[in-house]
Every structure is written in C-alpha cells, then in structure tokens.
Image 1: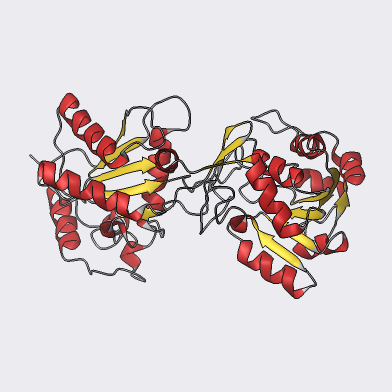
Image 2 (image 1 turned 135 degrees about the vertical axis):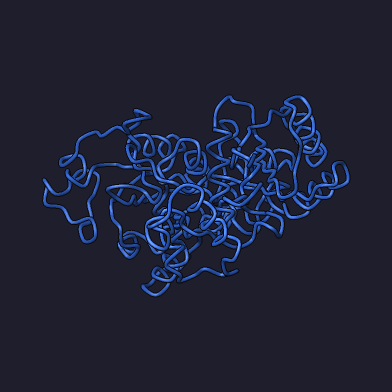
Length: 397
C-alpha cells in the first residue's frame, strides 16, 4: 500500500540552552532521542530546524541598554536623533528605544500609520477615511493624532504604543516629540540626524534620506554591528532581529550560523547514515487576517541553512491537472495519469500553467514559517523542529 501520510512537523523538546552550550551536540541528541522515544526513523531529506533564539543564546550574543546608548552617542553625538519607522513591539523594539533615548538629548519619533511595517495597527484605514486623512501625504503631530483618533489600544496586547514609546523615551531623561508620517523626507524638517528602523524597506529609506539632505544617517542594522565594550553584535543586521532578554539586556540575532547547520548535518549522517537538511529559523512570514500583523520582524526567515534547502518548490498543481489535462479520467486511471505526469515533470516549471497556483516563495521561507508555527513562541519548550516528508510528492511510496 502507498504511504498515506505526507508532511509531518514535530516540535522536539530540548534542554534550556545557556551561553556556551554545544548546540550541535544538543540538537543532534534531542532529535535522535525524540525519534527513539516516539518510534520513528530518521530519513534522507528530513529537515531539522532550530530557532534563532537558542543559537544566539548558545553564542552568548547579548548586549545591554548601556551598550546601545554608547553606540548611539558615538554615532549621533548625544544630541537630537530622529527615529523613524520602528515596529510597534514591547519585545522587539521597546528595549532598543530605551538605549536610543539613553544616548540622546532629544528623540523625534516618527511612526508610520495606519500601521507599522509588519502590520501592527495604530488606527484603521476606515478611521482614516472617516477623518479625510491621506496617510501617503499628511503629516500629523501628536496633538492632531490625539484629536482625530484618541487613545487607540492594540486589540491583542491592550497597549497604546504611542503613549508607551513616549513614556520610555521620557523615562530615560530625553525630550520627546512624536510625528506620524510615511514619507522618510518628513523627518528632515525636524532633524538631519536620522536613525531609520524599518526592516525590509531600509535600503530605500536610506537612499531617500541621503538624497534629500540627511546628514548623519544610520540604520538599526548599523547599531551594534560591532562589539561595544565586549558586547554581543551582529555585523550584518545590528539590532535588527533582536529581542528583549531582561529589562536591561537584549539578545541579538545570531551570527556565523553556517558552520552550525553543517556540523549538525554531519553528526546526524554519522549517527544514522541519513543525509538531512538543517536550518536556523526566526519569524515566519505569514499574515494574521484578524490582527493584520505580517509577523516577519526578523531581517530574514533563515540566517543559515544547508545546501539542499536552496531554491523554490518545483511542484505541479494537482487540481489543475485533474480539472484540465485529465478532466475525463477518474479513479485509478486518474491517479496513474497524475503520477506519470509528476514523474516526467520538468526540472524547472517556472511559467508553466500546470504549476500555476503553487506557492511562489523560497523553500527556507516556507519551511521557516512552518517551523515557527510548530514551535510557537511561548512555553511549548520545543525550539527544535523535525520535519519529515516535506519533499515527498504524490508518487512517493
């Protein structure tokens, strides 16, 4: 009988990871022990993934609010800083904002609206329509914002992020002015010293600022891109992808992960004779239809992965074949025809109608999203994910 189960994603429990732990050893042992305890075998092309959080923790990739403040002072001179396009997050950005404010005399905070880059809403589009406000043109000060929208709280967190961010800045002894705009040029009416905090649009923002009179311009990816007083750092992403660790400490996005994933791949091969794929994953890339958040607050879904995870899916759309090429067939005859079509499919289906409707995304982004949903972000205790059957298709026995 043909195999009846396709893709299976398992969250694997692991010890609490501490700085200096041998993560390659722990991940390998955890997966092998899980397979043994649950009675399943590791197969070729299985995928083993681990959260970026445990990688950064094992690396000890941490920095303090004071480290952030010192880097801000060194780059901006301790005076006024325009901080633009931050995401609205207590976990992701609030602690960074503390460090920024601690290193400046005044912060001009410019928030995008009606939502931040990853979908956290300040106000609704309907509310903008009712007030006749054009978010692509209109610049609002705090007084105007409050007059129009009052004190809006996030539907899930219950936080008024405008009030929260203002209190953080003032709590560090800095002056605070808040502006709402979506054009980077708007900040230049307040200060020529700008820290842009957007993630996926940061290169465009930088170009616009520099082309329109920005003088001292840095991105959040350039803050802690090198150690400060021996702190952690990330040479590629700086504070992007960081998370709150304590009230005075931030965990940065992991660095130098490629050797780790290849080490785990080698260890599993030696232990089982099976060649698995391995990746590190952060936030998935998917949108919540209710809260509207897009989720991807990390600069990339996967900072490191083994070679077999490169590329995009090369799949045929079964319902297209069933409804078009083989519309006259049914039962075993239809099944056999579709299997034959899969077996002879081209190595590259880009542009072919039979692949229309398959997901046009990179494998690591798809798999990382699956991993993020499997492991969760709370108390499941499964920072490792073991996926089987992801590369199977209808012909796989």
